[in-house]
Length: 438
Image (cartoon, rainbow, N blue to C red; front, side, top):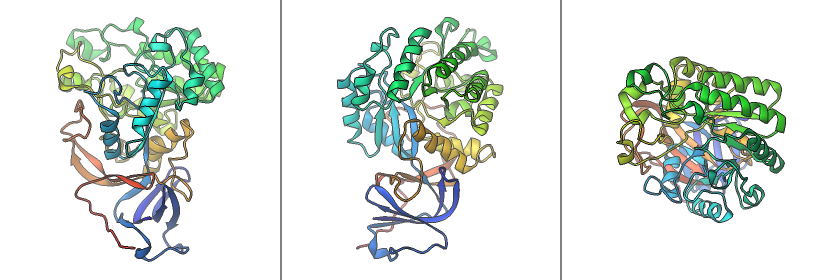
């Protein structure tokens, strides 16, 4: 048994934000005792294997990331399932959903089972999507029913947009029948000359054309209407365009089961970061204008955007050192996501802490129909404990990769403990728990 005492407990399901103690028994929350309530049978420290004093700290549901790349199998020099899970735990995540663009693709049961089996050896919950199309070719559906039965959490060809609208409709209909989400990478290559850099003022200064927002907007518009027609649960991945946010908002109003995710780098940075960070600020879709960033934040505030997801995309130092137009797109994000949310959303007053936890825990869990993302008796004992006011410099990463434009930045909000299934998956080294003999 673990007792967490004196913390500021955040439960995004009920909206509770206040002083409480939590008692964990096995892999479940046994009791949430709010300040002033009786202990109900458990009290003295000798009843607990471990007591964590959370005075001055926030206790919240473990974070859930619906969009990570652990590069395993096939690209384990960048990351593997174990190092990716360790990075997630350090960032406060207890559940992650891996993407299918590995080598081989996760388009067959054998590859999916490998990922899930390796994931079970880590200290957190590692789920995985499977591919929508065989070998990401966008022409023939993978055996979605067999993959779901084998444990696929959902389906995506993330990294490769699905260009054939009739095929996308077919895929959505199958996902709707199987009652699982389908997640879509929304960039039409027909409009893109160099990916990863927004077509605009900065790209012109660099002498390249880049990737215009219309490449994203056209596909988002199409897929919002297909979602409405099919009834599928559709996740618009890593949304970056203000116009796309408006289209998602409209689709929701029309009754479509459309969800949208935004990354911390898109609500934090703009296209100008490419001038100072080079390829470390190159990602698909690209960082866009200050106006786009403002509209992303507004989407988080009014509910058009449901989730914050990292799109954790590790690359080697050598790959990112290539010239800007040849370097791969993507950055790591698991170890900085919570702090970026606190620093750029909570501290300026855009979101409350309850709302941030809704975007980072409860809503992602709802999309994948998971029990987690809440703190109440009987819920999974998946928690994060953090100091929202502690400043720290982004320096050392647990991930194999360090391709982050935030390296060297000073952020607020530091994870002290990550507890998954009632077991401590991460503990900040300098933080000492109180251990009491039974």
